[in-house]
Length: 272
Image (tube, helix red, strand yellow):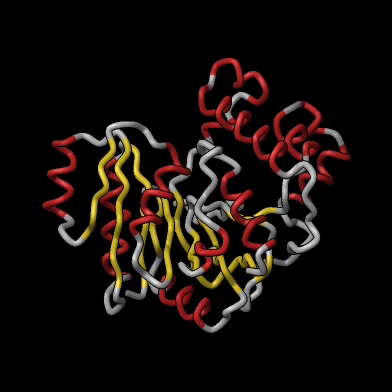
C-alpha cells in the first residue's frame, strides 16, 4: 500500500465529514487507506459515519486520548509506505497530496514533509518554527513579549528572517503535526512513535528533533496547501489562563516535560 492517512478526531463531527469528503477526492488513483481515531466516540455518530464513509477504518475509544496517543494508535495500524497525519479540522486542497507524495519519493533524505497551512479565509497560518528556548516561552506567554529583545526572539522563532516560500522546499526545525505532515513509514523503525510522555503539545517539536538527530530532514513544502480550521485554545488569556484553562495547563506541563527531556542535548544536526 502506498499511503495511509491517519486522522485524529475528538467530537467535532461536521468538520470530520468535510475532512473525509475532501480526502476522498484527493485519494482517487492512490492505493491508500483512511484510519480515523475516534476519541470519546458516540455510538450513534459512529454508525452514521460508518455508513457515510464505508471505506474508512474507525478506531474507537471511550476515553479522550488527546493528540499523542490518538496519532500513535493510528500509526500502529498504518500499512502504507507513507503516512499522512492530520487532525479532523484540516482539509486537503486539490492536488496537494499528490504533489507531496511525488516530492517525498524523489527526495529520500527527507523524512517529514509539511504543506503551507491557510486559515479558511485564505490567510497563512504559521506552521513551522525554530526550536523553543525557555525565553521563547516567556516571550509568548507574558508581558515580556512587548519588549524589543522578545520581539527579536519571536521573529527568529517564526522564521521571519528566512524565505520559506521556495518551490524546492525549505528545511525547518519543526512543524505542527496536527495540521498535516507526510512521513516515510520506514523512519518509524529508527525514530519510533510520538513520545507518550507528552499529552498534546510539544510532541511534534520532540518528534522533529528526533527526525533530525537520526539523519532525516524536516522540510516545509509550500507548493502543497492545506486549510486548517484552527482555534488556539491554549493561548487565550496569557499567563492567567493557567489558572482557568485546562488546555493551557496541559500546554505548560508538556512544555516542562520537553525542556527536561532535552536539557543536555545538542541542536547540532538540525536546520538553521
